[in-house]
Image 1 (tube, rainbow, N blue to C red):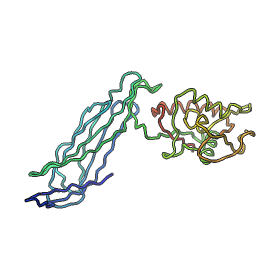
Image 2 (image 1 turned 135 degrees about the vertical axis):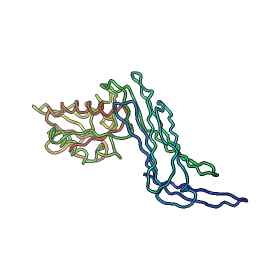
Image 3 (image 1 turned 90 degrees about the horizontal axis):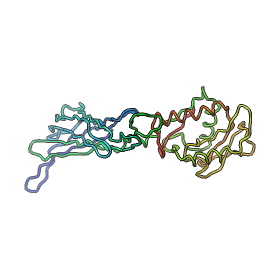
Image 4 (image 1 turned 45 degrees about the vertical axis):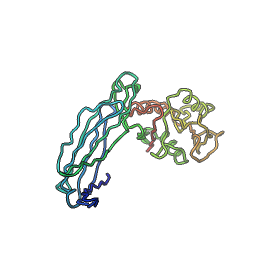
Length: 289
């Protein structure tokens, strides 16, 4: 939510006089679905105080699109600002043009809000979003869908269903490794060479223990793995005697965890990347609670 002030002036013989002020709240937001090639952009505004001519204004809005999308429909008819504390709504829908197999496209949507008073020049302001990416390139998703790619979606490991996996991730994050927050997310990689190097460097010398397998965090399918530098660390009970403990924001944590949980982790990761349309270079978070 933001504030907006609309001020009216008259100029007579070179002298400018303020004739009114309208103070407003503005809510500007968009929404979409990972399974749809259409998304919406809404804007709402409400005058909450002011005086004079400005409060007598009418307001209208025009929606526009740029990038790999087209404007499907929009509505923001001309309407008075008054009464105070009542909302004026505009809603627009946009369709992606990134529909061919393998296509990826971004779209910027814009609302131009304009105020009018008889005898005054019109005045307006833009409210824009340049945040939706739509694609037909997500493996396992046969239809087009749209996401906000800078939003770090959450990959979740249940501590009830996967206790040893979740425990390792919790300890790894507590030791300083990234991935738990928006400020320090992980970054997906689809480069198989990087993925293989991450796994080899982290767990290539892991011992053979019945029922257990080596888990690394950050996950191998992230750019924050050992291929990007750093050293290994571990914890008590992880059964990796040749690896020492440690802290800090770089490197990886390794631990021998229940084999069935580690095997399930690959499927959980795949399902997450598919459902959230997390592509190469996109941020994501990991939650193990």
